[in-house]
Length: 222
Image (tube, rainbow, N blue to C red; front, side):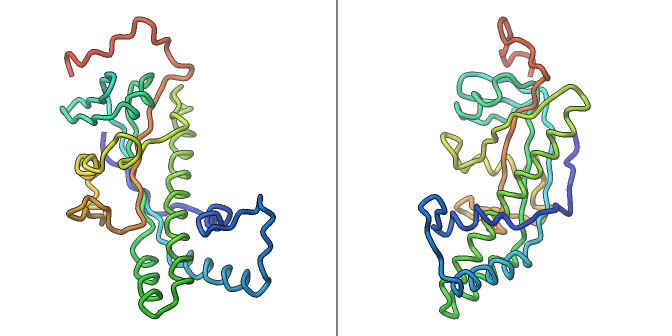
């Protein structure tokens, strides 16, 4: 199946998540001075204005799931017990990437170089949380579409660098999603550029799922 690109993802600023990343916890009844709050709000708005959220996705099937790996039809193997557990009831794999662009990271770096570490930290938080929010949106969008075919997307997703799925998986993800054509790249240390980008897997299941008793997850024939 071909990669589908979404060049615009509608988002609002994920304010609670940004504030948590900045260390503010409303559950501790922390009170922020009005002047400080205005400065933070202004920096959040300025950073958010620089986001350019885009995404792409692909459906991969068939898949074979074993205890500690997920195998694709082209022979690609993702060695991860956590990913295998997530998609153990799935018949297809959903793979997606989002980026909010490089502008916000460049602006944050310029602020840091100018000595404004506070604003730079706010831009960093805005970029990170906006990228996560973009992936949340894309996952919800995919889930809604799958209902038409009697399928559903797993609620959780799984990203390289999390649990036992190493960053080396990014090489295969970049190949499968053609992310270089999407304007993204990998550093020698396998970090993504633009920096505020996210890749993730989820499983596609039948709704309701077919009982797994007696299900043959052998890789023979794939």
